[in-house]
Image (cartoon, rainbow, N blue to C red; front, side, top):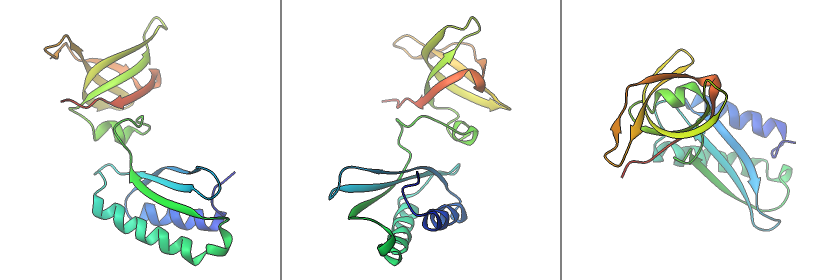
Length: 159
């Protein structure tokens, strides 16, 4: 079930695409009287605060124009994907080359592992990753892992 009437959601998706962004998530959360309409976007070039503010204003105007179609009150949140959001698209991996990445994957023997790596490159449907070893965070030799074997991957902030 869509959280917005079809024509409104289609307009929103079209506008997001025209702005060079991808809609990662559209959901309604909370309870009656304190509902939040959450829109999460990203792009290969990254999303600026100005772009988010403009999209939020545009979306607010769209929703105001269709107020009769939207049940109840809501608060609108438009944001970019946070670091804790799993990577879903190949372009999200490409834009994070050089960063630390925590990957849960199935190894060649079928064992599920979660390890910390540096994302060295993305080639076709494979990640070239270098294991991060020890407290000194030294890197091991880069190794390929098929994206099909990746169960979950998130960016790991380096402090």
